[in-house]
Image (spheres, rainbow, N blue to C red):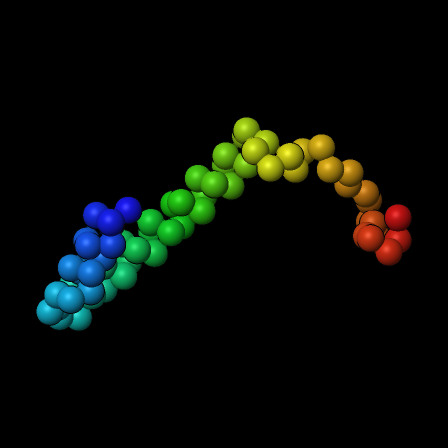
Length: 66
């Protein structure tokens, strides 16, 4: 974890022009989207959080209208 913090500090302390900044910003965004997609896939495929066993109602089903 310390290695990641050092790398992040190195990147943040670098002098960069607009092109380099956009490159790092897009890379960070795509990484975030990829990790989010991976977590959603793992939840649906592996049922890590137990969401498949929840009761789901039809139209109008809510905590108030069971």
